[in-house]
View 1 (cartoon, rainbow, N blue to C red):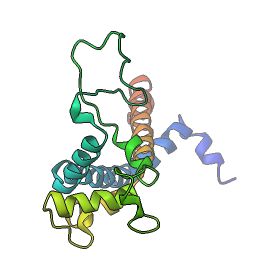
View 2 (tube, rainbow, N blue to C red):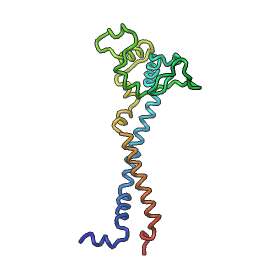
View 3 (tube, one colour):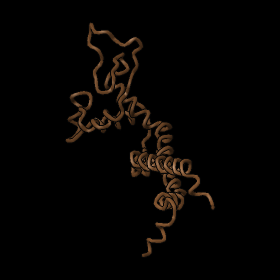
View 4 (tube, rainbow, N blue to C red):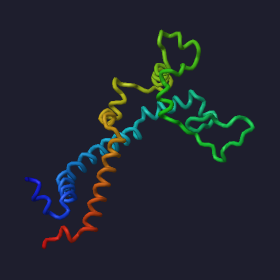
Length: 187
């Protein structure tokens, strides 16, 4: 009985969808914008981080990347006799390398005997402290990249999905109002 009056309203279901979109759009947009701002701030922190830049340089140098070797993410450099790309570029596949940091053996066979469990990460810290003269305060990455921990709890794929849903809802609302304008105009 209570739904009978809705049946008399022209285009009742699309109207309800439009009302729901109208009621939730500002909050949904604000939430998506907040998450995007968090990700952008973390990306800017990462770009500006001297510590991260130094870590990347250490990894590159230890892997002989500065000796002229080039690579493409996931593939080795061309072998001798193979055609090399016209303009060799040094590419550092951050994700691939960071995933392997704990499993990469530190340079120099003697260094691994320093203590049980001595890893590539220990070697990098040692390099930063001793050879580069860089001081590393406690929680150095958190100091240089304060937004990174918050961004780590933000899923970019979910933010993208939310934005796609908002775009689709906006497209449907525009289409509805364009194709059925007369149904929404006052009699």
